[in-house]
Image (cartoon, rainbow, N blue to C red):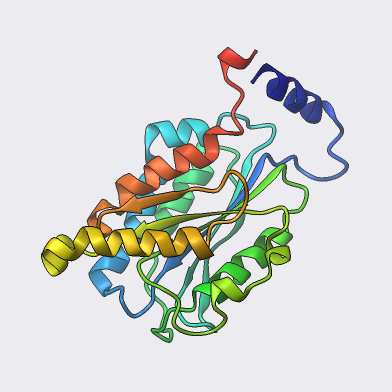
Length: 237
């Protein structure tokens, strides 16, 4: 940990070469396919907004103002349906984050094909992250409540497409009232699918939300895990 802190301190001391330093580029892809109804859509968008306003998450986001995190958010469904909700934005101060939160809360669902183009959603997020090659780390975060059923299958995408990028996942399980005793089996099967075909990179991980009502809690936990790796703590000095 001390070695990491020393290396990061050297990087921070280098000239910016005309570019604002960036410790992490984080692209969030939100599933709005046909299995997500209007109520669940709202819980997903508002859950992300609430996660960004969580005090601990906010502290991590603003921990290194000289090298801010850059955030982009998009929603996805069919292979041709990816909609940007937030273009790349440097999270350099609390006002910027508050403005993003307000923007998300006012977001309305865009018309789109209702199939699940998971592979295309991954490629779209990868293309976004290619715009941020100067960031120290680049992370794609895909939320999903189902398997791909249209467009390129995630298993058929060459690993080379994701070089230099970590892909994490937030799997959203079925609501308990709809699935009863089958709920844990459904979550386990979907989690195995995402682990096999979506996760990429040595530090990648999967978070689980037990239904859309649990999305906010899961997003908070996932963001803290994704972002804390680039923090310089007092213990590492």
